[in-house]
Length: 351
Image 1 (cartoon, rainbow, N blue to C red):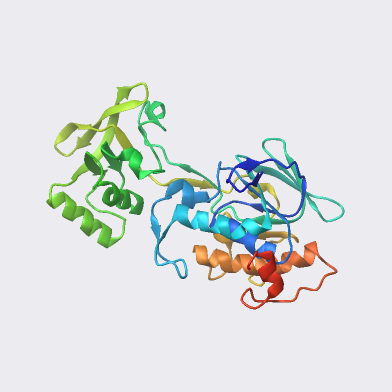
Image 2: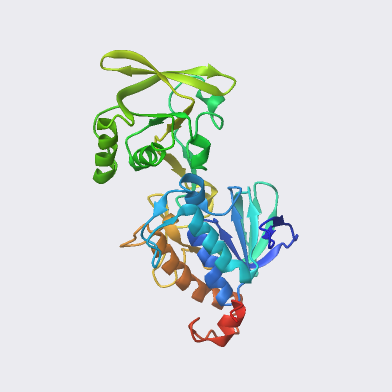
């Protein structure tokens, strides 16, 4: 699928590309930019229904502070800016599909097959799938499934959807604390529940949370959930067991932050060298043990690896230099700067 000027999905039916990027998170999107600069036509495949990866899926409105030149940017804003940046290269997108099979042809190209039966032929494969496929850890409560997506949410898509709600947040990490601080001003009531009075989140977030508790703006409970109450997906209350006994907490929206279960998925069967469920790469071109298959971002490993978005951007730039050699073997690549190269500026549509 390609995105038209209105941002809608447009199926072109193309089945052959210079490169396929698996993963439409920030690093995968920036890979499209770097590949576009060296004339590599790209298709991006992601199991989610939209671009942005974990940034858009898990914390679209949470600020990120370590993107160069952007003192603060939300996950969704970063995604939107990257989508705007890669627009000149006309990449195609396949959303809602997972790459299940990868096979090398005799001519060196690859056949990729998705779980929807789609087959795409490519010269280069770039795995930018973050930590792999991820699913939230579900609270061990009978009947919790009936409320998921209606009253129980494992990520906050839009803060406004929770305005005026009686919110119960469960957890003691950064996500639980961050959303406690962000939602406190707009919720009708907010209760933070954790199994112990110690928190894994940033110390300054813990201090701010405790200040809100002292001011009576939110409530902190130490205990564990034992039962949910409601009907037809509409949550009404949650029974909590504390040191003083059981208590029924009124809540029509619950956010359990118990972490994520990360799985490498089908990638693990592709014959790549792995290190503790991450893909080993070199640091010259971020190529895997298989020629023509690269891994960038959180899914790769090498000595000194830092799981930062900016590290993935660097990896994407070096990957693209080598990818060009496979896609255009008879064409010498002249390194150029976008600030001074008229040919690069033409590709970018700079006037």
